[in-house]
Picture (spheres, rainbow, N blue to C red):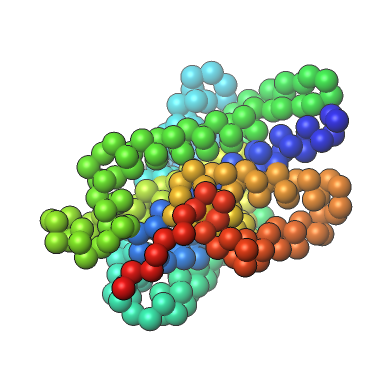
Length: 306
């Protein structure tokens, strides 16, 4: 039982990162019906930016642990700056890569998204090199144990941040003017524009928020794993996309649910079958969901617009 609970905790922590990335996928798809495959690479860029910001603050991979309010302040500053920079990158991607293709055949923006993904990977490879790089572990990481189950501060950080971001995003979407504009644009862009909503600005803000969340995920991923690499976003992005589809793409709560479920499935597969089978199981779930319930667990089947 202890082993099962330990893997469950590990899976929830892993799923929290997938959930944060999946929120960006689901937000963008909900409004422009675009699968932004570059989003996973924005997540990796977030971890690279965190390392650069920490270096500017004098925190290196071999530096000492910084506890108390100083460590918390540094972490908050790094998260905010990484989120801001990733958000700006998301806006630039939308403006220069996707905006002119909104009315193009769906294959065009899909290919463009893949091209942007390779572009970001190339930038990161030339910036930091092709090998894994260490992420500064500057926060203390106490471990809490009970009945043979161990929970460390990093796992709590992932779960708390991911749930907090989901709640904040839900409140933002349903209680702010911009959130209402996003929901109106998602329902009918033409009608929203006729009602005076600046659709271009709304979509740009959607990319900003989704990419900012990817930047936050980049920080907590670096703290959790201790390393990062320029190709990390490819597989993490695919699994986050699977999470978004599983929960119901376009549904914020569904993206979170899907992320946690994928993380748990991955952890249980690694424990009880083999590490080599995790991708097989995860992407088999994607195929089954697309075949049996394309709208996802929390999604709704909507009539096609005519």
